[in-house]
Image (cartoon, rainbow, N blue to C red; front, side, top):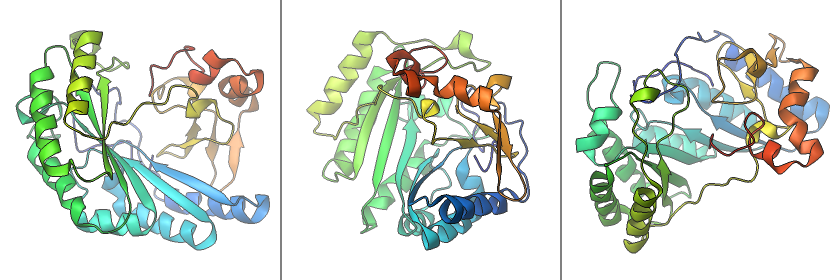
Length: 295
C-alpha cells in the first residue's frame, strides 16, 4: 500500500485515507526485497499493489518493479479504480510483469457515477471505460478482471454495462467479469447500503454468461491473511495482515525499518496464521470471522 490516499470517494468505501506515506518507503521495500533474495534465498515474489489508489504513486511502482525484476522472478497485480491507468502506463506496467488488474464498476454510468466519484464529486465511468477498452491494443499477455457490484435494484443498469462489455470485449479472453454483491465492510455509509438478494445476483450472473463473457469465480478456500508468507506493507511502514481490518491494533503486527528489516510481533502473527498450522478451514477462510466475507 504505497498510498492510503485516493482520488476517489466511493460511497461505500471503508478506508479513512488517514495514513501518510513515508518518503523513503520505496527504498525500504527495495532493501527488504534485497534481503529476501540474498539472505533467505527467495526465488519468486508476488507484488500486489493496493491502496488507497496505487496509481497515485505510479513512479514508485515502476522503480520497485524494475529493481525486483532485476534480481528475482516477480509477478505483479494491482487493485485500482482505473482512472489514472492510461494505456501508456498500463503497457509499461505489463512489460514489468504487473500483468493482472482488478477494476470496479457499479453498473452503467447512470448508476456507477452515483457511487464511484472523484474527490471533487465528478463522474468517473467514461474515463475508466475508455481506459479499459484501450488496453485491447496492447499485444502482451495480461488479465483485467472487471469487478461489478450488485446493489439492490441496480440489475438493469448492470445488464446495460454487460451489454457494452460484451460488444467491446467479448472476444478478448484477457478480460473477465467478476459479479459480486456490494458489501458492508465498516465504512461510514454502511447503514445506507442496500444489499441485493441472492436472486438478483444470480440473475445478473446468468445474464453475463448468456452474453458469452468470461466469468471469474471468487476463491473462498484460503484468505491471504492466513498465510505466513503474505504481508501487507502499509504506507506509513507498518505491517498488517488484512487489507480490510485496517484500523484495529490486532492488525498492526510490526513495521518495516529503514534498513529493510521486518520487525514483527510474533504473538499477533500467530493469531493471523493459526489456521495454516491447525488446518481449520474456517480460520483459513478468514482469521477474523471464520467466513469468506472479505474477498
